[in-house]
Image 1 (tube, rainbow, N blue to C red):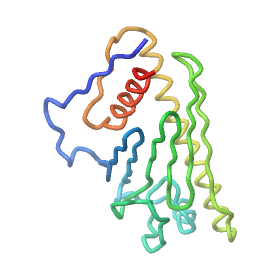
Image 2 (cartoon, one colour; image 1 turned 30 degrees about the vertical axis):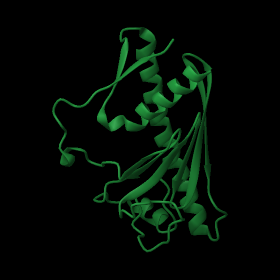
Image 3 (cartoon, rainbow, N blue to C red; image 1 turned 60 degrees about the vertical axis):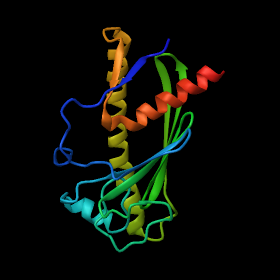
Image 4 (cartoon, rainbow, N blue to C red; image 1 turned 180 degrees about the vertical axis):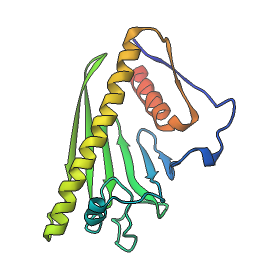
Length: 190
């Protein structure tokens, strides 16, 4: 059974100033996509974050703007870039950050169940500071993923209730709309 998804334009446009961290860039490919995510440039690091960030940032905005970034990362060269999310059809996400990358594989098991595999990758540290930064960033990443997973579980519970027959995608959900169309086109061709 398909979940009926409808694209909706906001009746009242949301002023850019009301979106605290608007996306920096979207790129849609025939079946894949990329999204560059910005962070809060006014964010003040806690003391331990500041120490870790001197040796490498992973999913929080870096205050070390003079460090070179890998090719392909932050295509807009925005100073508040956090990471680039690359969706690879059908079930793979590759997220590239300043000091490493992480991947998601989503393996459907049933209409209402999936296995979500998440892995983080870091280069071999060259000193104790880099090792500390990697371990610190692993914990920040773990906590962020747990928050995302909780949101997904709650959304699935609502969808499974049957109380809603349509799931409305707003303007900001461009990548979800794209994924839904690519999947629908793929299944319709089968």
